[in-house]
Image (cartoon, rainbow, N blue to C red):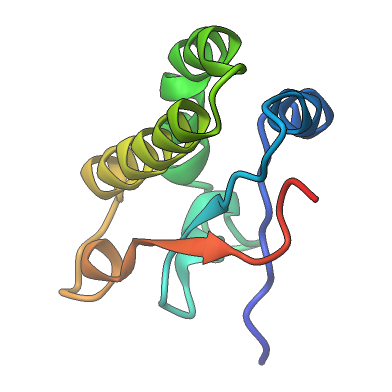
Length: 119
């Protein structure tokens, strides 16, 4: 069975406008897990209740992210720093909130570069 792809963005259109306003490009980040059952933990199944860990981690940084981006929009470097810091904050929050740890789920949560983001 193929692992379901989950994509979460925080006001993607607004972020893209802010990035374009800097006159440069900012490399987006993706926070993902590397286990087959991560999506099932997040959203549940017909036999198991959802135990969200990614969505709460994202919601915890939404306000600070929006405030920081509104202040960093004139500098590509500052905007990139905000994106990077936010991604690693989501990673840390997701690891702390992961409902189970078989030695795989928490250690598989990681930050990756998102190709083509902000273009």
